Image: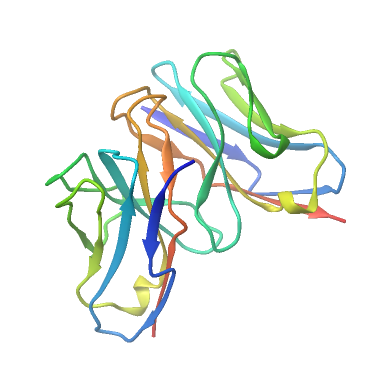
Length: 114
Length: 113
């Protein structure tokens, strides 16, 4: 069984401030973890993924996430928010390769205040 | 970067009409999915396929049907649309390696009036 919890359905930050979006997971096997971004009226775009190589994963648009097994967390960060970062962000977990199911979180809407 | 295409992007139709949402991918992925998403809400898996001639129902019950006659093509059909079907439909495919990474199309917005 696996699940994902995203803490905070809405997060507001000022432009230039640190972005921190929280994701905790539960998995009975070593997980693969993903962050996706969704802009209005568009599909989801893969931001980054953890596949058991390095615990700190760098993605597109300056985002990164750190896998912390002891905390079962995979929080998404960006040092300085831009207006263009305003979007919905989804965390997801998969139990492994092959045809394992991918479970998505409920999403966090990021608002960037000028 | 994923190459997965959905048409139409936006569609407004009357109640009772039959519609088909098209989805094609050029990556040769075996597994494909349809998700339903209301504005600002979470994703709900409604259908998936392991490959040609394979179709499975997802976590959320849906009156839509799907078919998979070719690897690259995974259309979704509503035989008789109702206002409750108004939503965004997202098609996706995944590669079996790297934890089943899912790639999404741009989505199809359906409005039933």
